[in-house]
Amino acid sequence: MPALEKALDVIELLANQKEGLSQGQISEAVGRSIHQIYRVLQALEARGYIYRDRPAGLYFLSIMMFELAHRHEPLRGLVQVALPQMRRLSDEIQQSCNLGIHNAGRILILAQVESPAPFGFRVRVGAEFPLFETATGHALMAFQPSETIDRWLATRAPSTHATFRATLAATRHKGFEEVADGMQPGITDLAFPILGPHGDSVAVLTVPYVATSYSTRDLVTVRQHAASATREIARLLAPHGNEV
View 1: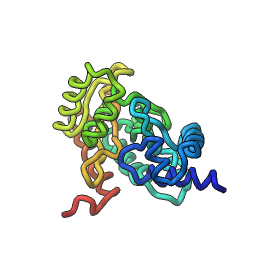
View 2: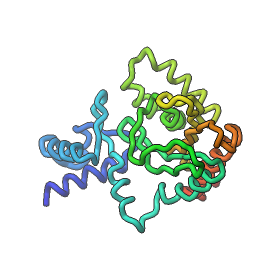
View 3: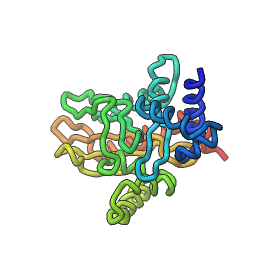
View 4: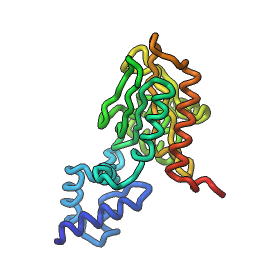
C-alpha cells in the first residue's frame, strides 16, 4: 500500500522533528518526489494528523496521535498522570481546574475537574482557546525555547512583539501566570506550567478562581496548592528527568 507507506513515512519523520519541515525538506527526507508528497500532505492535513504553519509554510505533527492513543484505555499518559492530582487539588481548594496544551496555534483543554463546592466554573474538555489572549497560553509560551516563541510570534503583527515578550518574561520570572479572565468577569485565572525534564512546558494546569461566599480558600492558598500539584504532576511524568 504505497499511499499508506508514504503517509506513515511523513508522520514518523515529523514525530522526530523539534522544528517543522517544508514540503521540499519532507520530500527529500523520505525519498519521494514533491508531487507524490503533496497529495499525502494534503490528506494528512485534512484529517488533522499534521498542520501547516501558514507564514513559514512548515509542517508539524498535531496531537491527533496523542488523542487517538488516549482513547485506548490501557495506555497511560499525561491525562492519566494528571487527573488524580487535579482531583486532589480540586478537593483541597474547592475550585475547578483544567489541563491545557498547545495544538495548532491554540490552547486545547485535555482534562477538567469540577469544583466540589456548590458553585464553580467549568471548562469543557476539547474546548479550544486563543494562545495569546489567555493565562494558559502565556504560561505555556513563557517556558518554551526562544525559537518556538519566535515562530509563534510570527503570526502576530511585529508591533506587538516587544510588549508580548515583556509579558512572557514577567510570567517566566514569577513561574506562573495570574490574570483576570478576559472572557468571564469575576474569575481570576491561575496558570502553572508543567515542565518537562529540559525545563520546557508540556502542558499547563489552570485554576479559574471564583471568589464567592462558597470560596473556603483565599487566592494565596489556592496559588500554593496549585503550584504544589503542578510540581507533583511534572515529577510523576519524568521522575528521573531532573536528576544529574
